[in-house]
Amino acid sequence: MRVRCNECGTEGEFQLAVWRCSCGGAWEPVGLPEFDPSNIFAQDFSIWRYGRMLGLDIDRPLKRMGVGWTPLVPIEFLGQKIHLKLEYLSPSGSFKDRGVNAMVNQLVHMRANLLVEDSSGNAGASLAAHSARFGIKSIIFVPAYASPSKLAQISIYGVDVVPIEGPRSAAEKAAQAIVGKDSVYASHAHNPAYLAGQMTAAWELWEQLDRHVPDWVISPVAQGGQFLGLWFGFKHLQDAGLVDRIPRMVAVQPARIAPLFNAWHQGLEEVKPIDASGPTVAEGVAISQPVRGKRLLQVIKDTNGMVLAIDEDAILMAQQDIARHGYYIEPTSALVIAAIKNLAEHFKPSDIVVVPLTGNGLKGKPKYDYGSKD
Ligand SMILES: [Zn+2]
Image 1 (cartoon, rainbow, N blue to C red):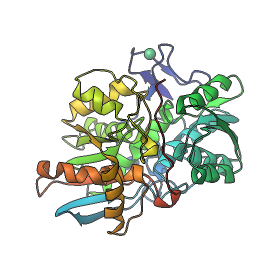
Image 2 (image 1 turned 90 degrees about the vertical axis):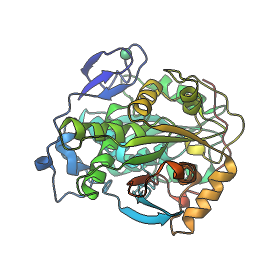
Image 3 (image 1 turned 135 degrees about the vertical axis):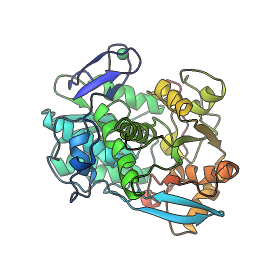
Image 4 (image 1 turned 135 degrees about the horizontal axis):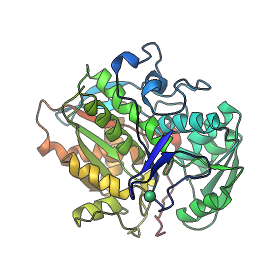
């Protein structure tokens, strides 16, 4: 698989042992085949529908998991028509499966036999589920404070779970410390195949909207895997001449820990690490600094996008509001529902507004999570 570093421009073939660029930047997928609708596997209702366009070394999955082709449901919400993309209806209950499924297939194809990841929740659960399905060993480092319901989910798949005391970043360091010759870093924040898998949501939207792209896409952002994957996917459609524009991309963060919001509103070109001003119920996005911060800021700028920061009360209220329409999602996922209220004045009645719902409410009640500085 061909990869490129957005920080320094280094390009090459992805190797198991080289999980990031020597400059510290994360790899992005490059040199993908042009998006050609005649290359869609029309009878495949998973991310592998687009297997020939993913830029991976395989175009069919090694094992079937059932990830992708999630429903797109139009509803009326606060007088605005919005389209809910039900990403939480996935085997492990979150959108993470889309990227993890592509990543695990690529890594196993490259003969990885021990995967290492750090996660406090959905990414760990997704990797653990895939490890079970693929019969491959994984070690997942989790912050000792992670919510018991999420730890229970990660554990039941039979992977090794290692709790690490201290902030979220301590688990990240512990994982990176054992990555080496025999173990491969299967990181949702760094892995380029993960990003490739997330592109498929954009292509599904294009098909589900009768070969149109939305006017707006609103996404909760921590590392920004979904946000960037969607953008890469839309850009790929544009490069192929299939659409003439890319949606306005809106990133949403909890006000208590909003590094991207801060950087954007300070006009910075990079996202600096910040301390949380307090705990947030949006535990899935409580990180102090994204790995791909520069790229996130560039996408927001290029798409005439926005970054919103949402207060705790509004997040919980939004979770309840959307439940009253029949959709039970976790608080992190409700960030985007809260954002709809703030964006009402910007929407035109004819606008197609897409709101991915990222995590299942059945994941359980969040434990407060303080972000970490490093
Ligand atoms: Zn680099």
